Image (cartoon, rainbow, N blue to C red; front, side, top):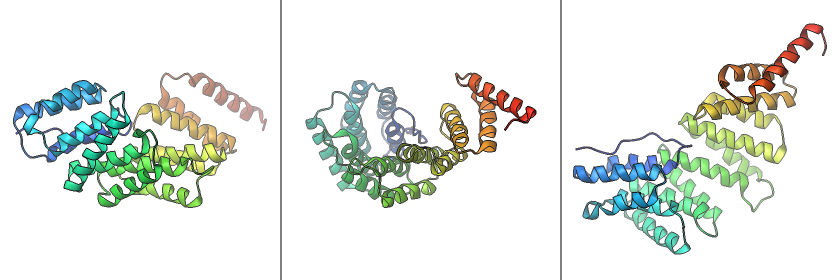
Length: 284
């Protein structure tokens, strides 16, 4: 019997939950091939943000719809515009029912993530504390699950940009810093380090902490080439401002090797030529 593919997490894909939802179908009981085809088409449509088409495919499942189909439908409804308070309330009720039914199966874990996400961004009046608690609870329940990884990246944003504080308290910084080493997925770890680097730059300006996290993001391996070269140039510029000349020059040179066609290439080439001319002439 065919099953939906167990897709890897793609944190920067549109949208991340779609791949995770499709992966969860692999844990559903075997169904008729026609139902599997509907699920695949629903996943494809949702990944392209064709939400009405995705809902139409899921509706055709009829009695064959399982717990994970209900969770997927809830996810689509949360992301389908226009989104009203009434729709969000109905979806939350459905998700709570799924979570109460079995908090540990794929549908329950997706419901837990979506409930936290709803408190975070989907309500007219978000509740960041409820969202943070939801993300933490999911990480405790299934720390190795891809949804827990995704929850960590969202939790870091709440810890670092909670509007209740002009600057995150030290315990929030510490909790956010402690998240990165727990993530086995390299792209997720890189994203979390970039989140921390941006937060340090936002609150403190250029400093060693921002540089440390930019370097850690590169070491982890960003999710795509564009993020990689942007992080590389970030290391170069930050190191340059901090007076770390050798590190900056190495990062600029690596940028030229890695970047391909890039609007910053000429400026970097000029900078390196000027530095080499100064070195040869003995100018400081």
